[in-house]
Amino acid sequence: MRRAKCPGTPRAATAVFESIHRAWRRVLEEVKRIVWVFAYLLFPALSALAHDPGLSTTQVAIRPDGIELTVGFAPTDVQNLLPSSARPAGGWKPADLKADQSAMMQLAQRLWEVGGDVGLAPARSASVALVENNSVIFTLEYPRPDGGRLRLRSLVLDQLPPGHRDFLTVKDEHGAIVLERLADAKENAFDIALSAAPAPTFWGFLGMGIEHIWTGYDHLLFLFGLLVVCRHFKSIFAIISCFTIAHSITLALATLKIVVLPSRVTEPAIAASILFVGLENLIRHGAEPKGRWALTFTFGLIHGFGFANALSDLGVGANGRGIAIPLFTFNLGVEIGQITIAAIVLPIVWRLRRNPGFVRTGVSALSTVVAAAGLYWFLRRTILS
Image 1: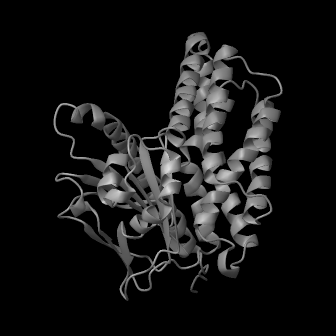
Image 2: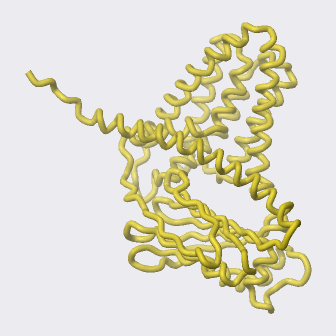
């Protein structure tokens, strides 16, 4: 007798394993990105020893419904690209951008050529801002090109001083880096394959939820900072339950467009929550604070908006797409990933807590790491953005 097959099971397993594979890839990408950040911060000091050729950045985000470019220049480089009549005298101020808004918008439109297999795509919107008086940031949105290719070409690198480089990063719909290059006047055109971006299935959203929490280092570190001082299963159950309920509420509200917070607000707030938990652990010398379930619930509301941004990047709710099933399955995947990590980490922590030396110094050392990571992410998402 032939055994009946369970339809969909191989496909479900494949979707989950692919999500796990992407998760590990993103871990490696995060390490590489941190190296790039430190290299970028050290660049001015190194360039002081020789002629500074100039460095700009271009971040390209591929969305289900469009392409977003964020281009950053030093003010002196922007001056080289503007007509002499539009160049401000002395230091740059926000008022200079408003005074020459027309010239800045014209420059924005000719920074990059964006197209696909069929032809070029005109920018749908453009904006420019001065950040901390030392960076001019252009933000442009383009329609997603038809066909299977995204073609990018810089139109200004050959107009900048010789040796100028542009650090180009291209991310796909899932936030994974698909291209990183140091572009220059000679290597200024790039061709990226676009995925067909089919609508994810039940198992696809489940796997994406697991992947998001496994690569959501900030969410995991927040939970770890809460749980490392817990001594009883009752406390752990209360904390995980409050975090789940809280982020589920704001995830639903944001996905349904009832309450929406931009990532520039939620991402620094998530980092601040990690910093707060780490510092509180240190102040209390590793003792378990009373009523931490309330703190967990409050901060969990903020983390829910971060989860919602991930669903939004997948196009959930856009163009009449359904919301209920993706919302439920993505959140279920987050919970599965969260419980899996807790089941692995907590027994190790509990065993270590049997050692009085770990309780005296180990918990404080781990809390210091949590606080330091929260501070790093907060600075990176604000003044180092």
